[in-house]
Image (cartoon, rainbow, N blue to C red; front, side, top):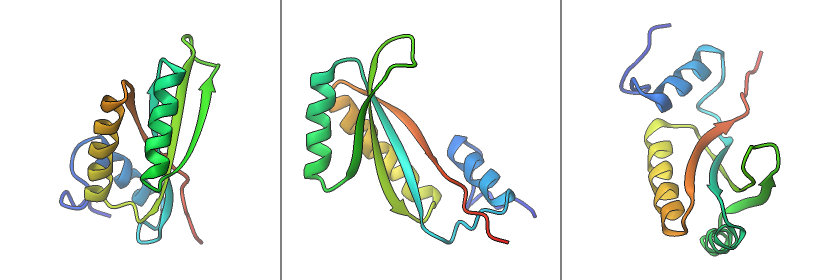
Length: 116
């Protein structure tokens, strides 16, 4: 399979999507993609979580006790087809929201959907 750089640009997001496609993941099917925002302060995380809930986002909020520094993590679950431009748009939106509440956008991931 030859990589189409319009569908899978040569950057982190494009590389992940290309690897998913190469692994046999059906990217035309919706996936639950998890976007994360990290906070140092519980109060900031809670304010951001309330904002995201008001924006009708499905989220979880927890303390990452395994990291060296105690961090509050919001995970936003978006059910969507994993298309490059949509992922980039959501990353920009979540980065803006993270900055607005004193947090840091921490990336995305999802489970692979490989069908035989």
